[in-house]
Length: 136
Ligand SMILES: *[C@@H]1O[C@H](CO)[C@@H](O)[C@H](O)[C@H]1NC(C)=O
Ligand SMILES: *[C@@H]1O[C@H](CO)[C@@H](O)[C@H](O)[C@H]1NC(C)=O
Image 1 (cartoon, rainbow, N blue to C red):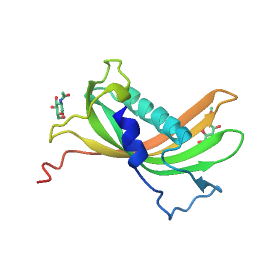
Image 2 (cartoon, helix red, strand yellow):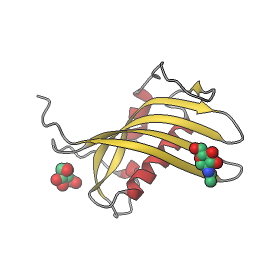
Image 3 (cartoon, helix red, strand yellow):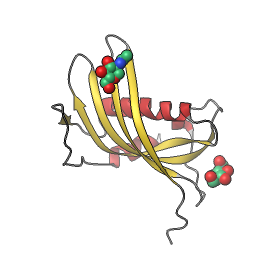
């Protein structure tokens, strides 16, 4: 539940982005944005070979292009959780790893969702930031 709360508190969109397609900003707490981010993050965790899963920390930017399906451009921040990869848990059920050595990261994802066709795909890049140590 706390992830939803974080999501609601978060974000307003970054303004400057040169996009080849006409797209519009959407609220970062829009349910469809959450769906897109969830899809992207599950894919990221699914592709991760070992270590812990990442859990969503905040959505920082969201844009949507309308079409037959919806194309989302989302930027989101993640934190290492306490659930190990392969444990089969959803990231929503995991707590943030409170260790000062826990990793954080930022992902930029393009998510395509077509509900009528039941197709979706994700292409994304995540930059993982190793713990910088204590912030006081
Ligand atoms: C938290 O993160 C640290 C550093 O990555 C790791 O060593 C530790 O096992 C993690 N704790 C849990 C409960 O997963
Ligand atoms: C994958 O996403 C791209 C847009 O990034 C879209 O044009 C393409 O049709 C999608 N492919 C499938 C198989 O859904």
